[in-house]
Length: 493
Image 1 (tube, rainbow, N blue to C red):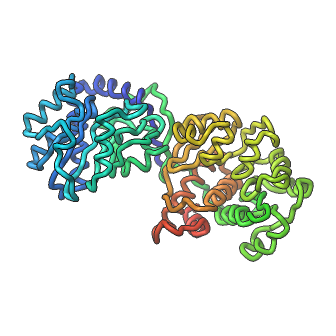
Image 2 (image 1 turned 90 degrees about the vertical axis):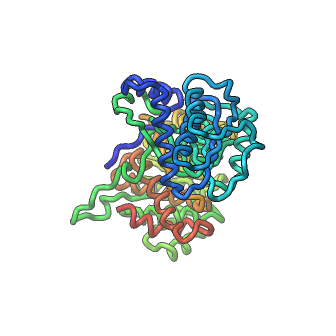
Image 3 (image 1 turned 30 degrees about the vertical axis):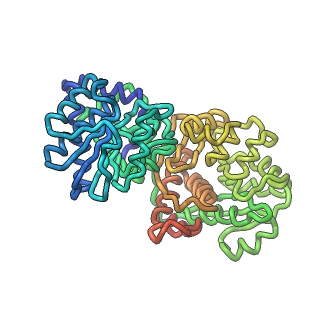
């Protein structure tokens, strides 16, 4: 099993740059040229038939990288134009040296967007405007340059990070949309969370020969898990029996929302749980028995009727289709006090945010699975604040409620007592009703089969996304939550 990948802040990356220069004993300009060569090699590998290159250069080291890429294109006799979006006379240090290198190689440099030729399908644009130090709002003329890049039909390579994207938070209201991002020295958190996955395209990592010891003593913001690094379930013994693999109770399904609870129950079954019970409204029983007769469905009309069902399960999943009416509040009040691990989702989170039920409760053995809106309600923030800094939001929810918090998104963050993990899996086709209900059932099933809450969260998030990617092979639009179930079963083993 591979180790997870560390994700760093912009400040830590600057320190790593300094350490690499010291450890390798190379001048900073030589390291800049090394970065430019790696970026240009990636450009040629991705677009071998490129006929023309346009490089948008800023004023710092990122702009210097761009001038190096432009020089290398000129050396290959590829027509190249560099747009100096910061006047060359304002350049200093390595950026100035890289600019002069580009001039010596015959690169045409223009200082106005109007002097650029129009792009076509044979052109590749290189974004080297802003690096990892950017935060706040784009200033002109860089903002106009970003808009020009985004209007183009040409593919875009971003050097280190798409300009306008915050390296620490993934925030980027006005940023370059790249097809390929070549990032150096260390992976930055913002490439993988928030707007990062939508803006970066493919992310290619180049360590530039940095030795492993330069990372010592620098704490990452988060750790990125992939399919090769998530924990897996142990192989089942030949004499296995159902009680070894967890009894899961799903609580939810108020009037009109019975499908949510049933999907959570079925996904728990398809994820390998030994026994599944469902506590739901009486009117949903016949549908549950028809859809999935393996689920033991129980009618409950009050929290008092739920009480006897709380003695048997090893894990309780509460929230799918629960609603926010008194029925749902009563069931959450009972389930939230049960002495087994909990998975809390959907309206259970909204009730929790209201503060009347389970007020002040903190548990080490529950997994909370909010999306952006639910996280905002749990914190009393607005959704824009969560989107602007999802890492801070995930950590704040975890600090408030303890346990494990899964903040769902294109880069899903898993906050727990030991730190924060990130997983990129899934696709836009999964933006449809019921997907979160499936994830809830998967997490509960994995805890029931012996994984700790944080291990279950890591594997479940990857499994859910990977199943979605397989199911989307026939197209993303029209993808339904239940389309994932056959893939969940295949991938969980």
